[in-house]
Image 1 (cartoon, rainbow, N blue to C red):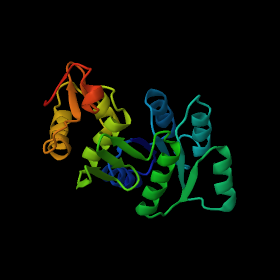
Image 2 (cartoon, helix red, strand yellow; image 1 turned 135 degrees about the vertical axis):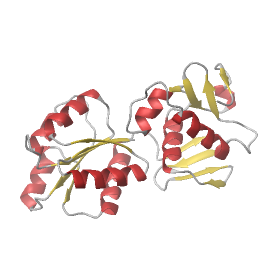
Image 3 (cartoon, helix red, strand yellow; image 1 turned 90 degrees about the horizontal axis):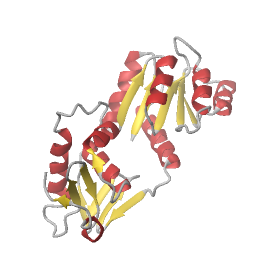
Length: 234
């Protein structure tokens, strides 16, 4: 999941970004409305966290421009203006939720998860064979064995499972899970795939994570995945 944080106060932006990244999300930040709109046009975001008081334009104007796009992600508004009229105006313009400053990060994270669930057309519980991923409780099991994953491992597995049977390039995985562009040199995806395989594949007879030559990786059961030209291992 990729989130854009639009906040001109660096302290708050860093605080929110670090917390979301620790929870397994990829995060971009923008310090003003113009930069935010450029980023929204250039990339697809699953959620936008938008401050109302920006240096170059009112946050409501940014929100209106986001909502004028053909497709737009959920928007969580952050504002020091907590009056009823302010909240109502923000919601009327198109905000999906409104959180006043100061706020506890645990509440922000809970609201983020609610909005992401609301915007996801895919199930909250993903399953491939005997591998199950609970997107809400962030739990993974295989053959009823509980599997502990680090946040980035969970995010990669969720991305693979939401795209079952579809080969995903290393570029796609990096841009979806990390706040960085794939430079063609990093082996970070291969490293994390090895970690994932050691946890969800190595001790089981059926191997689900497949390497697709010349492309990247995908997850599927052998009955479907075997039709594609793939190899086990990195």
